[in-house]
Image 1 (tube, rainbow, N blue to C red):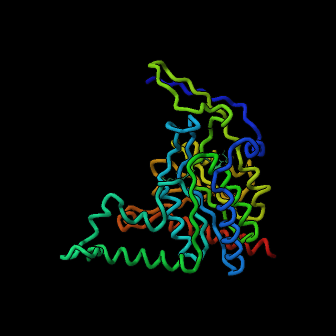
Image 2 (cartoon, protein in one colour):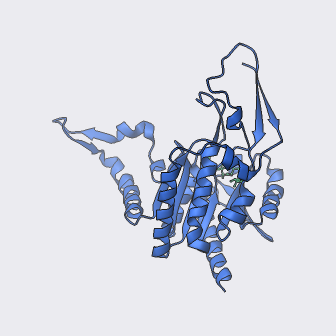
Length: 319
Ligand code: PMT
């Protein structure tokens, strides 16, 4: 079926978006969890990072059968969450439903049943011996952070769900002040159909081309930096497919919003190299072929670098 997608540039203001769009059903309970979790971390004197991970969707119908998706596997966010936890942070992990999750990402769901064994009496299930070392190591790390109440996961699907949840999380971590970091690795839709313009039911196929008009999603970044989390250390990501544009776009984002860091990456090489752009400095972070073979993940170096910058930010702004 031939399709035509038109994009209109007129857009409502960021604030008006929250008045007009429908809030996710479970928003109140998510807010409560976010506030309780942030308060606990404050009492424990911990640093706290909010990680967003995975792509957002744009439904084409209210009872959505069809939707437009943004590319992101959730690998960056899920790996980073584990390294932040290892570094002693508490982690709020806002993730796209069904994207990769911290800890779970080490196991392939499609092989789940292959890892299990049944006893001769067919009354008991156990994990096969060859899986035990890896499972044990991941499980122990997961149980430690869960028992310490240092890890909270909340999910989103649509861009609207994401923006409501991001605002709630940013406002909740305000109690942590400068000890809070926002690490925005999600791939967020730039265009959507406002709910007032969505058809209720599935769009019928008539054999003719379909024309869909998309509006620009209001940029929330200004509000985030100025109003929702003015004290937090804010790291945004910039994804490009053309490497020639990466530096200029990353510096442009930093210049426009005046937050702390932009991590720039190119789609094909994102697992091997990134640039870290701060005011007046550009650093490259990369992993060598040898490190790649050894299973070293770039997020290990990225998180280490950002955690140090965050510590400096906390110290400098205290003085
Ligand atoms: O998940 P993986 O497969 O591992 O891939 C990781 C990744 C490539 C998705 C990740 O490293 C990455 O680059 N994420 C950012 C993707 C991106 O293109 O961002 P953006 O240019 O759409 O947005 C830039 C910033 O603007 C974001 O921090 C976003 O929160 C913000 N934004 C976006 C839309 C919007 N309406 N308001 C916003 O404030």
